[in-house]
Image (cartoon, rainbow, N blue to C red; front, side, top):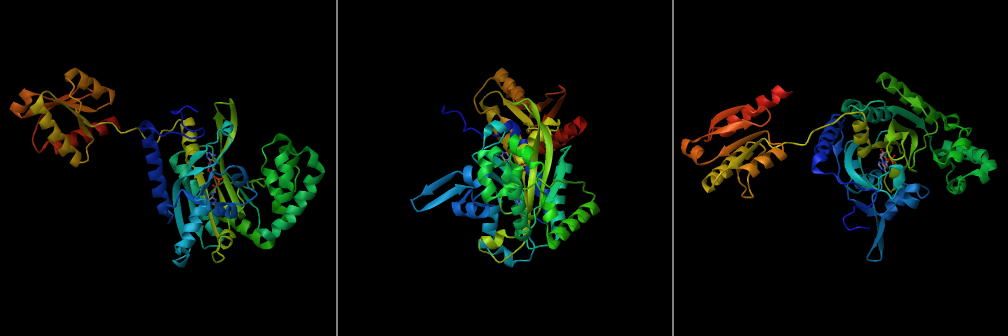
Length: 435
Ligand code: HAM
């Protein structure tokens, strides 16, 4: 690998696009707070066992996709492939379940999965996720789903479909898994190698297989909704009713099983279509996925506590927005660039720049020692909105000309302590006329 090539499946977020990421993250934080979720930050790596126990030994994530290192020969650690296991570990270790329940937390973090990059999947990607612990009630499911829905709608992503399903509890799943095994067994020889082993260990995973033959066979498979126990069935009915009350449109998709083992009862995905440039075809893309995981907290050593949440892929959200022609924010532009001519003028520009910055204005001046033309060229390249040339004449008169670089309009201004305030008025007026 060339030294200057970034690892496959990773992306650089450059200054030209970081403004969009900041705007997206600000928006997510504000919306999460309206629903009572507060931010949690957890380590980038955890003990490997947390993920193998939490996410599930039979999942692709644990079997094929984890970045694991051993440290000092005794422990192995893994870069988090998702946010839930680490967040629940932190919630338990720090006693957050002893506070008022339900506990609601959100996170914005990077995840690492050794995925097939041909399919547009990233090996480092970012998720916004929420977890709510302490409510068994379907109204919690509706609330979590409505948060994801509000984010998607308010940020302006169009054509997103909400698909829901219930995969029941371990009790109803036992009967269902037997039915699935019986259904797939006669097709054993036609299944892909992965599904052959899934058939024994976790037959529900077959429904998720992307292999065309397995997919076709799976079409006639029994559906989980026919196997739900009374409790799971009532839970699903109540969720549907609550979604209806909130005016949230959904479709029921009995094929959603999700790729992580901890789910129980409600599972859901927000799906959109997108044009894959590499493969030149339209594809479905899951921008957000989640569900209930009532057994996970106990499985990780806590008191039995029902919980649920979702994870939203931020690269996928931004990609979908871009394909739909939406830009969340433009990179910030320099408000004023001082062009000093000579040593004395440089000193004045230094002081003026500092005083404007104290007032929150994006101000720059020459730090290279360039001449007039080179400075103006630089100001133009960085898209400075205003410039002000300061030379001997300006120093003597105590006044200089502020130039609006877009309209060419010029205003003479005093070079004294009133400059920051007067400049701020002009700058705001300029922004308003553009809007
Ligand atoms: P997940 O479905 O594995 O769930 O991931 C959630 C979202 O992360 C996906 O819907 C997708 O938008 C994004 N994503 C996943 N893998 C990739 C990838 N390789 N490249 C780009 N984006 C990706 C979870 O991770 C669960 N922890 C969600 C959850 C939280 N369930 C309950 N609480």
